[in-house]
Picture (cartoon, rainbow, N blue to C red):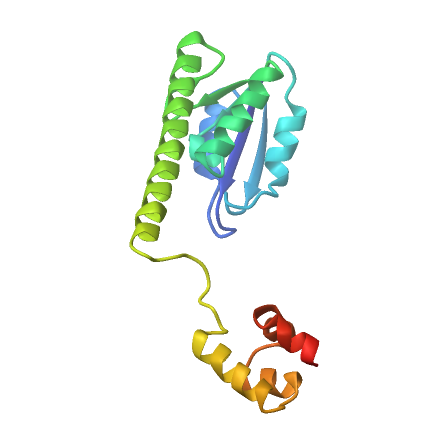
Length: 186
């Protein structure tokens, strides 16, 4: 059985173009969503996936109507394939119920994995290069060396740790973490 799925991102948009194309393709049942593809909660898609049985084919107007991202799309197709359900995209002319369609889709999947690995390698290389130049990531320290020196002087003069922390704009635990001896003195 051909099962259609159509989605538009906004409630003002019209599903007619997609549903007409799905009906023309021979879909006996069509599920729809009017919400962003970024959102994980798409009840129409969940219903379509639950409705599909072995031997059925989920039909979409375009692949981007089905998946939030390429990795999500690949995971969805793997799940469908495991269940014996095919996927057909009308615009891209991909049909995973055929051998050629499976090949094309797996090539897309391999390219997506390759791209993820390249991004990961570039990110690591950039972080390593920044570290070699003395730069570290993360949030800047709120308790600077100047504040540490000022805290030491205030504590030596007898100022209570709570007042030292308040005057320097830090918490008492931060003061104790950086100057453990001040905890013993308190």
